[in-house]
Amino acid sequence: MLESKVKIINPLGLHARAAAQLVRLASSFQSEVKLFRTDNNVIADAKSILSVLTLAASKGTELELKVKGNDEQKAFQSICDIFANGFGEI
Amino acid sequence: MKKIGGVIVSHGQVASELLAAAETIVGVQSHITAVSIGWHDDVEIARDEIARAIKKVSDGKGILLLTDMFGGTPTNISAMFIKKGEIEIVTGINLPMVIKLATQNKEMTLEEMAKSVEEQGKQAIYRTSELLEPHK
Image 1: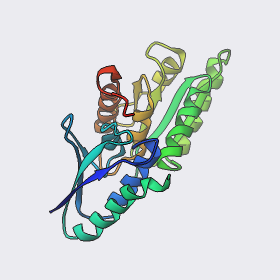
Image 2 (image 1 turned 90 degrees about the vertical axis):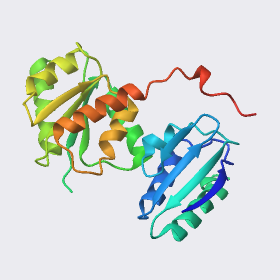
Image 3 (image 1 turned 90 degrees about the horizontal axis):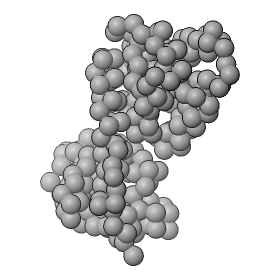
Image 4 (image 1 turned 180 degrees about the vertical axis):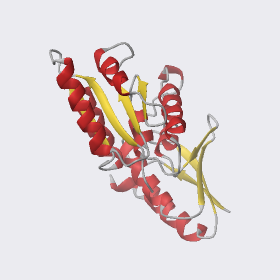
């Protein structure tokens, strides 16, 4: 399993369209992809948009990303990238 | 995978706008359509329109009618179509319910889908003042 902290850096936070982008990306891999919000103990399945939205992650929020499965390396890298480039919004 | 079809039925343009919002988020949904019942529409006309919509999105796996308000005309007219195992209604539509129906990704019976959409709709209501603190 690979894990890392990721930070929301785009001004609008993890809003619906950004979440949809994340879900599309995560769903393209076989690995299980989870996001944990540690300050209020919310866990989200990154392959479900409605689950991701429950994180209510605004700009500045730190999340814990955990990726597990046979393509975890690739999945982990691409998902870290999408967070790092602020969902293409900055 | 065959999908359960969805028809959103509402007063005014709420139905088509909810569908438009969902499609902006999760992409075009060919298995969901919207019917707006005009405030002065004739019941017969409205019923025909719902019947056409049902036909349009039917894929043989059942149809979920999502209406705006229990007890309202769109729900009452939709209720004429209820058929066990084939057509179900869930009232009180909100955007997460549309997204739930849009993003069906595993085999579910119509009954299971109706239950899960109902649950999703209820779960998606929050009083946010205590949950969300602004990050400056």
